[in-house]
Structure formats: structure tokens, C-alpha cells
Length: 273
Ligand code: YH5
Image 1 (cartoon, protein in one colour):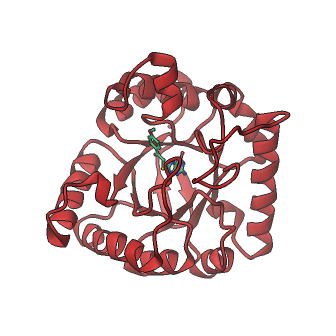
Image 2 (image 1 turned 45 degrees about the vertical axis):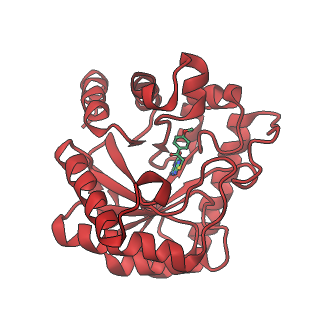
């Protein structure tokens, strides 16, 4: 069992991805959007997701930023409705303090921040809210992060960055047992960097915190397998299993049912529970 404050989940666990960006749904108005999102969440829960990650800001390479009001409008109705429907722990994929606060009061118990609480007021808000946090490494910012990213030693630099953010969190009053860390696959990394991070994931275990990994459908897997985004499930599962063998506790995934099956095999062999 993994305990991240209010979040209690098996180790390893699958975090199901629930995108509530307009490009992820054909737009039939707000009711339709919330309804579709809820149905998707329900099926991920039935498939064994231990955690649902609700995100309203696209952080894909080159994506534009979203205004606070727009992001609130996308994620809060979905979190409220999901909270009424299920006890599943909900995380909110956001970097904005007002969205973090509204999401937690709507029922989220984890903040998943690809900017590792570096935006204005994010660190203080997370500390005050007392929920679990996921700190992710990103080199640069979404709009420009894939423009020739460079490192001397990617695994070491990611570990140093995450170590520094963990210290900042603890100094701000966030309990260590509320924190998990994520190397940020695809966020300011070449395909070679991503492969190296997956191979050296064990280096992050020195921080002695649960490791979350998001590899699902990402372009490095497309590069290696030669598959388009809709055809990357087998590659995503292979990467998820490697991540768990190398110490990941939580896998963020689109294809929950298949990933849960694969991780059952991995944990049976590893003897984890
Ligand atoms: C992550 O790794 N990723 S959003 C591009 C794709 C496919 C998927 C080209 N939020 C992470 O999922 N949060 C995202 O195909 C995340 N870790 C954490 N903690 C990007 C994404 C994606 C991008």
C-alpha cells in the first residue's frame, strides 16, 4: 500500500488520464463534456485505475497556455461530478494556484504539477491545502521545451532538480510523506534523453519517495516503434512495465485496463503489493 497523505493506493498503481481539453472531445456543450468525461472516468475505475488525473490544460509540446477561468470551467464541474459518483482519489493536473485550490475544495486529494509548484503561489497553496503533490521535472516551458534540449547528464540533472524541489516543498511546510516525484518524460528531452531516464530510473530512488511515470502514447515510443499516436498501446505497456521494474510506484496511462493487467504480472514477479 502506498500512502500519500489522504491518498491510499496499491503499489504499483495506475493513474487514469482524464483530459478535459476541448481538443479531446467533440464539443457538444458543457453538459455533454462533463457527461463524456464522467463516463470515461467510470470505465477507467472499472478497469482498475487507483487514481484519476483530471487535466484542463494541454501541456503538449508547442501548446498555448490556458486562462485560469477557462481551466476552472473545464476541470471543476468534472471533479465535482466525479466526487459525487465515486470515492476514487482524484488528482488535478495543473500549475495554477487558483485551480489547485478550487479543485481541492471540489474533492481532489492530489496536485499533479508539471511545473513542480514553481508558479506564483503554487507552493504556498499546496502547503496550505495539505494534499498530496506530484513534482515533475521539465526543462524549459511547454511552448519551447523541445527546441534542442541539452544536458551533461540527464538522469543526474533531473534527480538534482527534483531533490531541490522536494526541499523547497518541505521548507514550505509540505510533509515529506505527501510528496511523489516524476522525471517528466517528453518534457524538454530528446528521445535519447527519455530512453536514458527510463533505463536509469533507479537513480531517482535515492530521493526515497514514490516515483510516478507518464510514458503513455508519448512521441519517444512512436519514434522507437514507428507507430502513430493511436497505435502506441503495446509500446506504452512495455515502457510502463520497465518503469515499474525500475522502481516506479504509479503509472499515468490512457489504456487503463491493459496497463493494470501488465502491472499485475510485473508486481507478481517483483513480489510487491
Ligand atoms: C507526465 O509525464 N504528462 S500531459 C504527448 C503525447 C501523449 C501524451 C505525443 N501530464 C505527464 O500525457 N503529469 C502530462 O503524445 C503529466 N507526468 C505527470 N505527472 C502530456 C501527455 C502526452 C503528451
